[in-house]
Length: 89
Image (cartoon, rainbow, N blue to C red):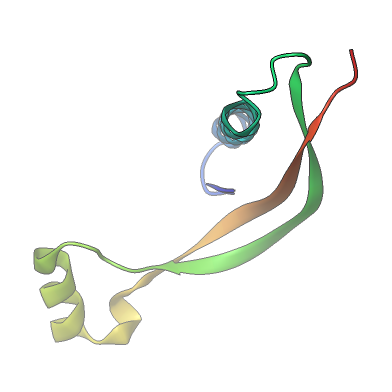
């Protein structure tokens, strides 16, 4: 899971909260057959790094190829590695 670090502090906090909600939802989906306890997750590792964003549609890719590789945007992101577990009753 990752979220962007660019922007105002309150936006970054909202992105982090959204990433954590997505992790919780993912663990709930994986544990759906076992309804005896609530799904939980824990963050195993957390780090920041700059990732380059690759354009996915043909129009953006054409522009990027014309301008060279330096046209790709490099943005700071926070990465979260999490694992799902089950809480006891």
